[in-house]
Image 1 (cartoon, rainbow, N blue to C red):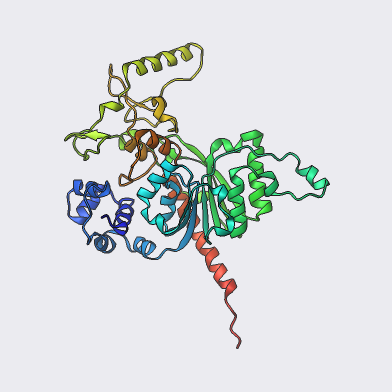
Image 2: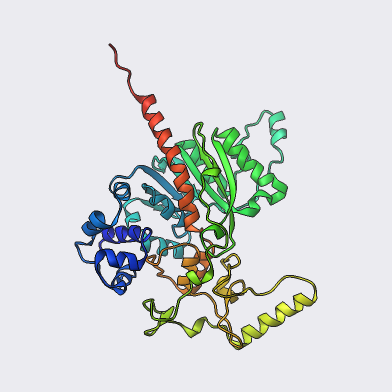
Length: 418
């Protein structure tokens, strides 16, 4: 039986050290670390204490032993946002994710979730039943909004606000929980096109709701995951605080785009990596041939690209090699893999990324468990977030969250009567 505490600590250690570095610290073989990570072998019972005492820096130890803030994970997917906030001492106290396959992956990687409520459909959850929390995290889907009729409702003296303008959208469920629970902060994530959707009206309603209706200080920015991983992936991040702060996006530490290339996440196929069935096999951990495109599919994609090239369009497959930065990984990648095809050399058919490579492309550590089929894994990673981006945003939010917590405690202190 795997120890939840040990696996959690091992996952935390792997966000700080490579397999080779961790193996050296623990005086074990790299393959042993790998086997522990994929749960092939049970870690020894003493490993928890060893990691706490010898591996994790003191600040990381304090973050694990004493959680500094509580958060809820809405539209949780497979937990990419959660990983980023756990790295800075966050404790998840409520999770919501409707997809049963995503739930399977989430629970495999966060077994401690069984200690709190794991809701399916958030629309069926009463906001009063959501536990108190400091931070609300939500990668809510983009749905149509309407601002039409608000002025008419005003004229008729009828109530309006976010309940009127966002009812019927999943953002409404985020708003009603914020309104009821008043977290100190929130982080919302969405596709870049949210800014221009419906000629900007959708985003206008969101800002009006968060700022004017709910009274939060709001900051938003489009960030490209390419700063951290070899993938062009732009997402808009919306940060809010229940109080005045000096939060600034200028505090982000963003590595230069292109500084990380695809070779860093591809299977090396030279024996330096332990084979992980069904993705790789053999002593050299070669990529399974099932990921190589069939002759018919490769012929079709080439003809399709050529047809659009002649028509002056830019549609077609994306062929990459180890020096490349890829296009955005999509949830439809399982269909033909056309947006990211890995070259296997001249006159050879290219291949898809394996699910493990997709996980790496999104910044997930190798200890992250993939318990589902390839089709579901491709969908899940294509719908997920670039985890290092979430971790960096959590880093710059954390001091402001701490200050708001201190101010709240000071406000509730009873003055001494002298």
